Amino acid sequence: SQTIHQWPATLVQPVGSPLSLECTVEGTSNPNLYWYRQAAGRGLQLLFYSVGIGQISSEVPQNLSASRPQDRQFILSSKKLLLSDSGFYLCAWQPGRSSYEQYFGPGTRLTVT
Amino acid sequence: DAKTTQPTSMDCAEGRAANLPCNHSTISGNEYVYWYRQIHSQGPQYIIHGLKNNETNEMASLIITEDRKSSTLILPHATLRDTAVYYCIVKDSGYALNFGKGTSLLVTP
Image (cartoon, rainbow over all chains, first blue to last red; front, side, top):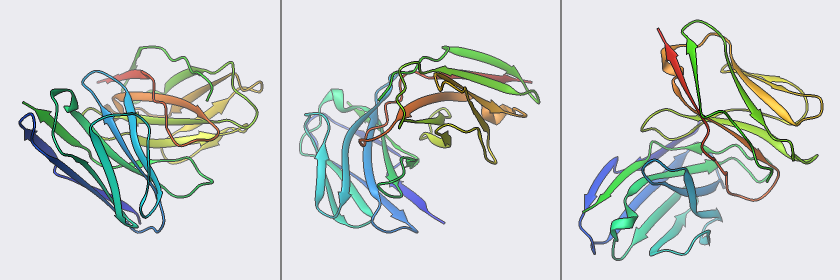
């Protein structure tokens, strides 16, 4: 069966520090991969999605970037965190282009201080 | 993607059926209805989806009206672990899932 992993689970970082969040999926190949952010008390916002290795699409401008170095690995990064980057970061995978179910990981709760 | 309207909150007694409504009056012919839920501090969980026919799986049933302008998610025997925010999403293409505000379901003992 397929599983999705995210780490770390929680993170406290000072403003201006770098960020790297990792997401890996097991048990599937060539999935679509997604990064979402959920700010406190708000809905989920799609940040990036990827349909293949090295293919990244950004939904909103921000100081974050994403990379997909391997088929089942998706990384979210920032060179300098802002206070507004605080939130709950969720990675999700989708089986294929003909289905729209997305399966979410446990999330990373980021607090920028 | 069509807009959806859901009640802000609902209560349900443990062991009873929870019926969560969703209006999607502008749905187009090729758009599916998806339901997800998010338990506090966890990632959203896919529940079920449908196009025209009613659907059932191990988690829930989805009833879609004949004109497809509304649907109801049914949790047949709600438990305390079903307390969550439930999202109804209408979608045909593209990548983003627009979760909206959903319905906060509280299952009480």
